Amino acid sequence: MKRALNASLQHLNSFSVAARAGQLLELESEQDLQVFMTEHDFDPERDLILGGGSNILFAGDVEGTVVLNHVHGKRIVADSENEVLVDVCGGENWHQLVLWSLQQGLSGIENLSLIPGLVGAAPMQNIGAYGVELADVIVSVQALELASGRRRSFGHDDCQFGYRDSRFKSVDAGRFLITRIRLRLQRIFTAELNYAGVGEELRAMGVKDPTAKQVSAAIVRLRRRKLPDPQVTGNAGSFFKNPVVDRAVAAQLAKDFEGLPVYATDHQAAKLSAAWMIEQCGWKGHRQGDAGVARQHALVLVNHGHASGQQILELADAIGDSVRSRYGIELQPEPRIVR
Image 1: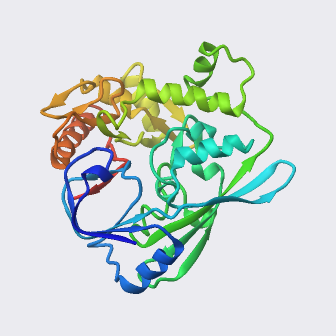
Image 2: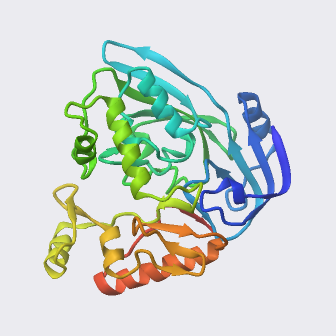
Image 3: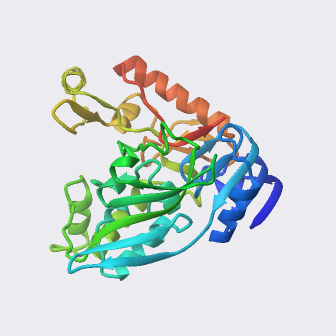
C-alpha cells in the first residue's frame, strides 16, 4: 500500500484541475484491501474512493483520505458454446479490458471502446456509448461495505441501473468500494449499429460486414474525432446527461423548437439532446478564461490550461441556467462534483 499526506490530485483527474487530499492511499493487492478495511475508518462525508478520475470535478479539496483501487486481475470463469463469464478486478483500465476481450474472441462491450476510467467506476454511472450500456452485459458486482468491512455481492437487478446511474452513485453513494465485476460476453458476434454515426464510420472504413474488432476501431475513430483528448485538453467527456422527460413534454418541445432531436426510450418517456440545446444557446466553443466548451462537442467542458474546478463549475451553472431559461429543461451533470 502506498501512502502520501497532503497529496496533489491534479494528475489524478482528467480535468487536470488543482486539488489536494489530506491523505492519499493506493491499494495494489487483495491484502491491501484487507489492511485498509482493518486500519481505516472510512467516512463518506470526509473521504473519497477515486477511480481513474475521468468522471469527477474537483471544485474543492478533500480534507480526508482519497483511496485509489489499483488491484488488477481478470479471468474467464465460465465458457460455454457462446456465452462466456468474465471476472474483472476494479483496478483494471476499462479500455484495456475491451481490447483484451476482443483478443479472446469475445464481444459485447466493443461499443464501449475508449471510455476512460477504471472497471470499478464503470457500474457506478452505468457507462454507456453508441447504443450499449454496461447494464446490458453485467451479471454481478462485488464490493466492500466501507462502514463494516463486509464483502457484499449484488446481482444485476440489485444494482438498480438507470441512465448513467446506479445505486452506487445515488442511494448508496460513498457506501461501497467496488472490487470486482462479472460480465456476460459472447463468442457469436451480433453488431449493434443503430446509433447514429457508427454505420457511416464503418462504411468510410470500407467495411460492409463488420467484426467486433472493426466496430471497436470505428468507435475509437469516432471518439477521437469528436471528443478532445484529456491528455492534451483537460476534460471529463460529456459533462451533462441527456434529459429524459415525459413524451408529451418532448413532443411539445419538438413542436416549439424545430430540429430538436428526440429519442424514444419507452412508452412514457423520451430522451432529449442536451448537446443540441447547449449549442443552440450559443455555448459551443465558448471560453471564459481557461474554462470552456469544446469546439468539437457542446456536451464537453474543458480546461484550456489553468482553470480551477470552481471556474468550470461556474461555467456549467451558466450553461444550465440558459438551457432552463430557453427550454424549461433542467440539465444534470454526469461527473461527480466535489466541493
